[in-house]
Amino acid sequence: MKDHQIINIGKSIFGLCFLLGNICLFGYLITGNEDFAVGGYMLFIFGTLLNLLFVIGLVIYGIAIQSKLNACLRAIGILMINIPIAILYAVIGTNII
Image (cartoon, rainbow, N blue to C red):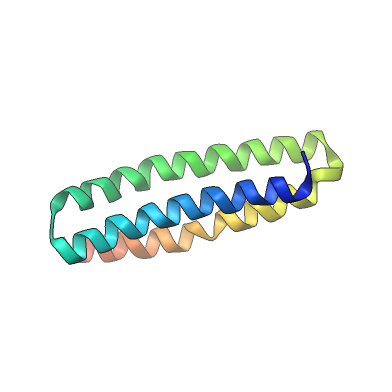
């Protein structure tokens, strides 16, 4: 796998989780529909597992193929941006509900 493909995997997973988190948060803020809040909670749980799974996979891949370690670490860094965003959204969600 090429370096840009590894980094694109990190960007794609980040973008997916970020987009779904925004849909849940702003969907609840705009409509007041509790289903968005439940979906956001489920996304928080499953998104954490998904991101953790990809981080572990990238670490293993980077260790196994040393020439790809820097690309894997960059992709992991992109995925880690989700952590403070998820915490912020969780705080906003708990304060609203």
